Each structure stands twice: as structure tokens, then as C-alpha cells.
Amino acid sequence: MEQHRAVVVGAGVGGLTAAVALHLGGWQVTVLERAADLAPVGAGIGLAPNAQRALDVIGLGDRVRDLAAWQGDGGMRAPGGRWLARTDAQAAAARFGGPLVLLHRATLVDILTSALPDGAVRTGAAATLVDPGDDHRPARVATPDGEIEAALVVAADGIRSATRGALFPGHPGPRYAGCTTWRVVVPAPERPFAPHETWGAGRLWGTQPLKDGRIYAYAMAAAPAGGRAPDDERAELLRLFGDWHHPVPEILAAVDPAQVLRHDVHHLTDPLPAFHQGRVALLGDAAHAMMPSLGQGGNQAIEDAVVLAHHVGPAADAPLTGPAPGFVPSRALAAYTADRLPRTTAIVRKAARTGAVTLLAARPAVALRATLVSAVSRFGPGLVLRGFDGIADWRPPVAPARSA
Image: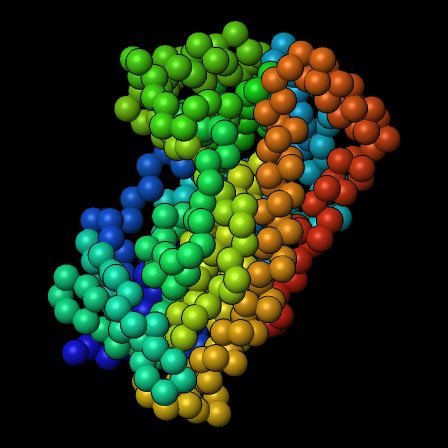
């Protein structure tokens, strides 16, 4: 039977960040990824200052900041183009300690994997938890090549986490949030535009520039679970957003229907009793899936990763069996839960409230929402940004590492 000190199940953003953080702490790390490769298609991710500071801990924060594409103004618009609220990138950076950085997920995956040893990530390797272990016996994970024993297992296996189901079989799991999302990455339109999010009746569209000159666009709409377009998803986007303001029609004209990603939104409205059991820690969507309305899903997974690595400490005293002064799983992982569960539960709930406001569909409610947003905006960007106080200003419990 193979023996590894740390096994990470899932090579998403949170899992890879955890792998890097543990590796820098001296842990022997193996990442097991079910997919055949690490090539996310058509998806961007926004990294707020809280996630950037977490990446500072593993020496990668400045590499991400160098990819910031927009330092001017943006804001919120109505479908006809009227600005409801303007945001100031400099004011946001001053308030929270840095800019919002939009980048392609593939770029972030490349940055993270470049900080891991060759062979640390195994693709095409589905993993199943066999035994979570405890202070006196290792955890065991089954793979197509046999079982692995580990001093620590990090379950970053996503919103449908099989590991979460094995640890907490009585938990109801994720619930449908009543909406679906679309994501595309396309070349920039010829006519300039300011980054924006546009809120309509039960619909939302966002357009953001990437450093490489492309555009990341995303949309959300209220819809029944499991729905799909009768023709293709580009045609569905045209039906929903084709008559909205510039640059939405130009972006949709450039979309390859085969490259549109559509996903129903599910979230964990019932918090887990803990983010750990035995030698297993849950992380990211496996622990606290949330609506995308605050843009914090990936950011919170990155926070999880560096906080977990902080609490488990260096690997020198992490045996596969028996307690050790440097790493007692029950103590270290309980501290991780205590740090992360209250914070992420609050953000999951706030994201749900914000999502409900975003998806208001009744005409009077939509008109009132626009009036309130405009009124708040007139008092300055500080009032708009205040909604991210306590989220984007988070700081990790450990000092930054030397930039890689």
C-alpha cells in the first residue's frame, strides 16, 4: 500500500492552493484529480484582495497582481445602458488593500501547478475515501491503482463532494438556488467599454477584461433546474440578452456556441457541523458552496487552503500512525473548522441574500432596486464598497512568503 503524508482530492483552485501551501511546509503531497487533464475551458475567476493576500502566504500573490487588467472605473448598469452606480478601482484598492484581478482559470491553475514538484498531480485518478482515520491510524483513500494511506487528506472535490457525503451522510447537501449561469471567453470588441455588471429583471450580465486582451463575460438568470436551450446556449443568451447595451451584442456575436459553459447554481444553505472528521479536511465548494453573487467562491477556497496549512503546521512531526506533538489531527483540524466555518457560513448567507436581490423579476421590485442602487451610489463609492467590508479586507493568520 502506498504511503503519503498528504493527499489532496481534487485539482481545482482550492485543492492546488492547499497542495502548494502544504508542500512549502515540507509535506509530501499527492493531488488526485478525476479529470483527464487540468484544462478549464471558457471560465474566468476574479481574485479579490483577500485571496491575493492568501496567495502572498505561498509566494504567488504578486504574480497574480501583475495580471490586473483594469485600473479605471466600472460599475452597475441597466439593460438599456444607464449607469446605476459607478465604482472606482483606486477607491476599492485603497479600502481593501489591492485591486480585483480577473484572470482565466487556466492561468491560475498554471501558476499553482508551477509551484508543485513534477509528478505531484495525478490526472485521471478518481479517489474515494475508505477510512477517515483518527489520531491513532492513517486515513485511507482508494484509487484505480490501489489504496493510499495518508497522515492528512484534503477533500477539495467540489460541490458534489463524495467525501463530504461519506463524512456527513445525514447532511442534506447542496440545494438548487433557482438560477443558472453561463460563462464565455472571447476576443475584445473593437469599441471600448468600461467593465460592468448589468442587472435586469431576473437576469444579470457581466463583462470584464482580461490581461491577455480577451473578455470574460458571465450571465445569470432565474430558470428551472436542469434546463437546457432547445437549440444551443449561444442562441439562449441571444434571446435573453441580445438587445442589451454595448458591448453585450458584440460579445454574443463573437461567441462559439461550443465554448459556452452553462451550469445550474447550487449552494450549501445548511452549514455542515464541521469541516473535518478524523484526518480529513473539507475545503472550498465541498465545504461551503455559495452563489456567485459576491464572486467569493474561489476566493474562500484559497483562504481555506492557507488557513488549513497554517493549522496543520510543518510535516516533520506528521506520522501516519499515532499522535505527535507537532501534528495531532483532532486538534489541528478542529482549529481549522473553528476558523473557517463561521466566516464561510456568513458569506454563504450573504451571497444568497445578494443573489435574491439580483434576480428580482417583478417590474416594481426591479424599478425600486434601480432607484435604491442609484441613490446609494450618489453618496460615493464608499457606500457601495461597504458591502465587502469583512470579506475583501480579510488577512491570513500567517506572514507572506518570499514572492515566487
